[in-house]
Image 1 (spheres, one colour):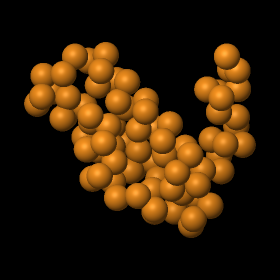
Image 2 (cartoon, one colour; image 1 turned 120 degrees about the vertical axis):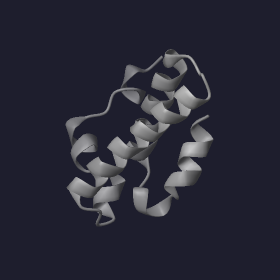
Image 3 (cartoon, helix red, strand yellow; image 1 turned 60 degrees about the vertical axis):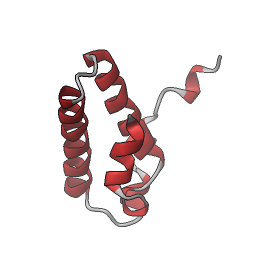
Image 4 (cartoon, helix red, strand yellow; image 1 turned 180 degrees about the vertical axis):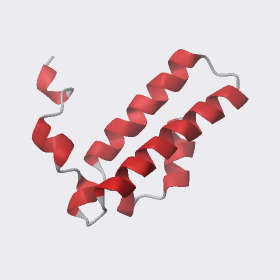
Length: 82
């Protein structure tokens, strides 16, 4: 298995698709934080194990390092994590 598929470079972390689409850095950080908070809240309400909730948060973050927040509805993204 090629480890490079799972590790993001500094270039990828600093030049996300959202930033390339004109999303300000502070807004992107707020969306990432809010996304993880919402996933955590949903996991608690649904009584999902913390390991599953944490995995959902990682998948959420990884998805938005490859796709732009400006091209995807955040609510739909939350619903698809579970």
